[in-house]
Length: 138
Image 1 (cartoon, rainbow, N blue to C red):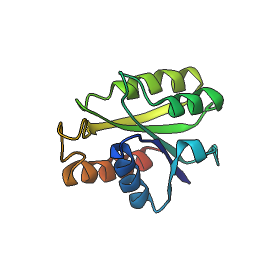
Image 2: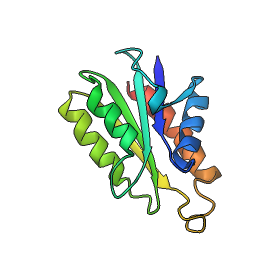
Image 3: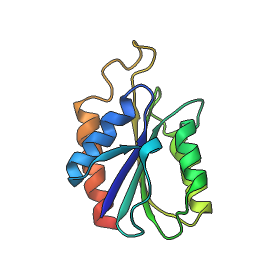
């Protein structure tokens, strides 16, 4: 069983979450409505990058749940596409005993003009490939 949970303020990470969820035939769930359903399968967690960190709601979710033994795949968007938010999420999850299967980051539109077309069709195709790779690793 796979689960896709995300935080997205501007809609960029939601686009990735929807692409990943569609590939896996599951629903993408906003983090403030999510609960961990299973300790088996793969948990996909995604967030935008806000000052180098994941969104506040995602941080709350990470800090308030148990992840011991869970297989987790991380995804995110940021202005630079560097994935700094994923490094922060990884650290928290690993300290809580999660197994990080992989990370996917791409550029996201910021301030309505920077990276205006991202995530684009290629980014979404890469996110779908990432979903398949992560489920094969689990």
